[in-house]
Image: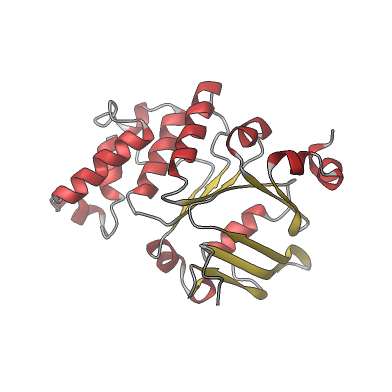
Length: 248
């Protein structure tokens, strides 16, 4: 199965849609606690890759291993989520008529239904977890505010908090700063950096200034496979990356 030193191993992954290879023998691995940034032009395969990792799309060939033993291709979407992989989509999906705290309560690992969640009493450990997450996402003062009253950036942080309540080992974060103010983008950079270490984090983003602010290792996808990989300076100065993506 996977390399015992990796939290995620993707090996020779191929996905085709109507003859178009969205992924073409893609091979990629992520270390435990790593913050990895993935960039590339539209159609490079970034979303398809995340769809395969989370069970939404099934590949034609290849393997995806979580930890040292778990074959993600044998699991359903709910099983993958329950197994420790959380995905944050570009558009936030919080419950706007519930408070920040209620949103986090609903997201608690093991809470299966809306009614059950409302009726269940939280344990002391769950209360501690909730307040830790509120602190992490910077919404302690807003914990009684309705989701509908939050700014766009605050909704994004709340959704990240909802994922954290489920204690994921790997977080997939899609374009987290799209539509944010510069101040919100800066706070999001701090948040994602604070999560690395305890969690592994994969960030897909087009905002290169944001990527520069958080990136230690960057993977560039092009035509469904890895074009280049390295630190930001290496990637920025790679002639192939400049030609197909950066355009400078």
